Image (cartoon, rainbow, N blue to C red; front, side, top):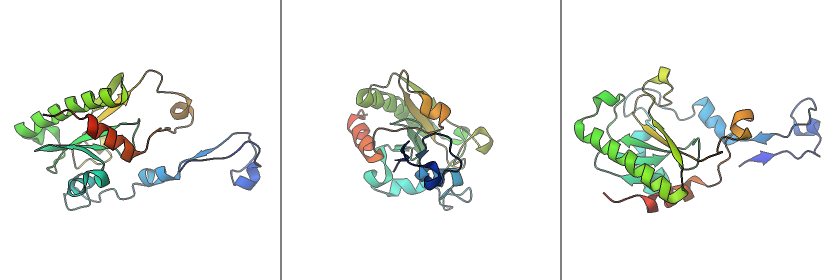
Length: 187
């Protein structure tokens, strides 16, 4: 839950330190991501990998948008924008070059379907699509390949992420999952 301190509230009483006339937007739920809470401890599928655990959950609990034979689409728990999803192989594999032909084909197909669903559900005007292979490349969970699909709109980069390093998301993840699942094109 976001908590915003009112300008009229004395800063000293709010525990923010020296008075500076700034409002503060607190997002304590992000601390789990920053600290790496529940991040897998090893590189194997039995080391707490969320991408190995999610397929065993219901679609609603796992925030799964669609399931295929080799891959699934799931909402990102820490999205850059509303509708930010990932396409993941079921198989615990770290590198794109390790995918077999069927996994590669279905990953590409699900990426295309994600674009169609996001355009239909949210009117996305553009996308950032890609994967970070390896921790040094920025992968938060490097041991299990996942491709990001981030919808974009004109003007979606405003002062909040630029100055406040905070994203304001207008919809709950469960509501976004339901909307995208309903817009997912059939095979």
